[in-house]
Image (cartoon, rainbow, N blue to C red; front, side, top):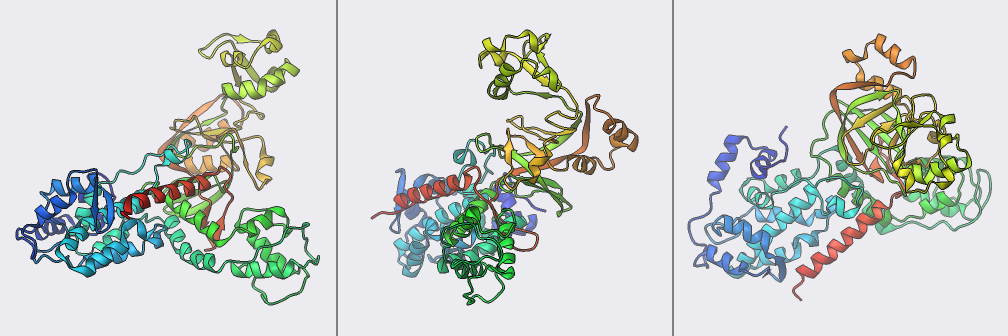
Length: 563
């Protein structure tokens, strides 16, 4: 498979389906014209003069930042990309502008790519407008290609807990490749993410555009409604669930009885939105029902934006933790093997989002208490009970760099301040009560975050599982360990029996092959049944993405308007 990378131009050619020999032929056939365009004494001089030397350039009623277009054309001796030797715009311009006009299909805005201005310039045919269309189209293709391929936002600018480096994009290479390929429209289509998560959301977005236009009724607030009860809100509830397809009965039924058919529809809605499927019309379910189509469209658009931050190729085998859904998908040979529930960081201690790979497992792990947790949580407990540590299988050390082991009873905890706790190291030994349970799964990251077992199994019974200090707790870690180590000579039945049969010693086992891991935040996706699923914005990331996109759109409008 051909992948987008650096140098981008040659590989973009490859992604468009051109073998190396054909790519070379395209380069020869699309060499810059050597004749002046009709009506222009020299198109190169016209382009250079139009771009000028200022920080911005005005073309076709649009103001552009001049840097990208200047670099593009200066590097090619100011030869045009879209003007043919007869001084006319190349016939491939129309399909490209048509593609830009469909940017909404990708959750983007056609106005960001100067579609109306380009359409007017193309219809004109005036020599000056031809030059303006040449420059503006190059700027549009560069912007569109970068937006659809890598995203409009820089992850770390959205939230400090995104530890993701944007994919590099050679903007000049995008425009040059598009101008040389016989099917530039197909080339632009290929720039969008190919994995099913993105493509499914793209399909769902079109449906929610219609729903957003039509809207749906709002359920009035009131006491919780239980199956079999009656309420004047019931006919409104039927109409609401008819709009999004959960209710399969008669939408004109005005009965006030909360009947079994409608209860089933509410349970289906609750399942799709991560709520407890109890059929009770309570405050949380009503609030979720009352989110309008425009809100759901924003969730889809924000989720599509974040999916552009992922690698172009996720691989055939990988793990994906979705923090917003409290789940982890295990994928092998491109197919979903299992979805496992997880516990993630609290809203004030969120699990960071990054890409890494599991490299080794540690059975019977110790747990060193982070200083912040020691100060905030353990110091108050020790002031109340000086034996708190020793009674729970912890050891206390006088410093973080080795230090001597101390008795917790030998410390005057009343006199120890929060800052003093940072000089003491607390380590929990392996055992049934260890916070990491039987095994932890290690990967490189800047946050000291890992996946692990937990003795707090009751947390997995909760619908909202943002309950940890930042690491990811697994519902079935032993299953995952066996799955990852299946076939490894380091995980023979005999060794497994020894490791699993006691709590000592701490044992590290390397994975034969690192397993890619993606920690993402997706509040909207299409599930295995083909149904749209949504989750709440537990970390407020959707709100930040939508706000950042609106701010970016405003900046682009201010720049692009010459009025």
